[in-house]
Image (cartoon, rainbow, N blue to C red; front, side):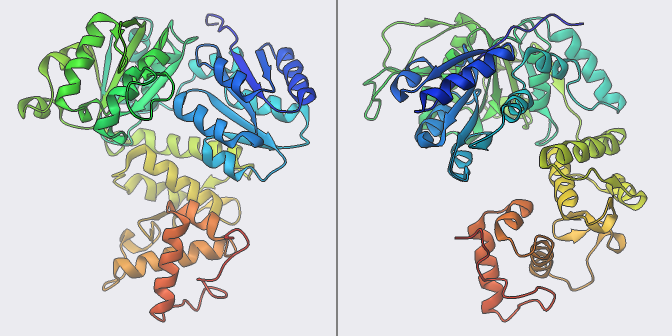
Length: 451
């Protein structure tokens, strides 16, 4: 048995005092620490990832859902209310429960988010699927490194599971009861990155109406993941190096440094040696981050992981969506093994999710698995001679719409595109007189969820 994981707090915000108190009593019975509030201002004053792992927020406060998730992205949010929950989910909530809901429903959601210590411990003991020998060796390194404070640099192609490894290191570390804070450095404009990392004081610049805690302060007592660290501009790299050396940060507009206690894990999908040689990445920062290097091989080079991962995603998606767990047919397995997986594990999860939802019956065939608009069951996994990408795209869109009875919202989700993009595609086919005979009705028409 592992070391016990202490309980974390769960903050509650609902204008109905009775509801807030009932939730607090229920949460206390699970062994967690509830903090109920009926005041939005009071809630915002106290919410903090060091004290709260989960927040339960009424759908009357969609702005609080969005603001909490933006400022403290490690806090999982459960939204509750009488609406359909779409606004809350779009704002960043992980789950939505419509009132009235049963006591066991909220408990199940809390457990699914990993709040109780027993659940978190179980996750830490079984972090991810490892069948290939190369990944087995990486797992051994993780087990040795996790209990230390050493910085770790995880290198590999996009979608190989670098962030999963980072979470596993944190879950197996002595800091597992502290916060885990990740930041995708490639997704934030350079002009905003310094304040995002280090925070800012009220009045530091136009629009700074209140002091904001940066990601490093959020990670105090825990782990910070610098995802795609090679995307940081050269000027900001010097400030980052100083933070790593001094273990203190300077908020933008601040007058004195703030001490922080964190462990740093970094990832990159670039050739970091080439970045250093080209003068885009500091050599001294590289040495500070690269105490323990881990190179994750692409999925095409770890063939023994392919089928176990596929089975894992089948189970995960069936549990999440509440649908029948299906089996992979022999031809489907063969197709998965032959595919080159340019998008790695992330691509596999998307493909299995699509196949699970669109497959009728209990067996996934090669024909049910689509990549870039074509079925893996097609001869040689190649389209017919003369087939254009446009035709392949149209065929996939129409077949997906058929499977979901014309529901464009669900089809767009399965296709990995926005509703607007799907609408534009369908309008384009209609204008060109390309309506499919296989699709029932007008593909450009509105379905019940489009309004």
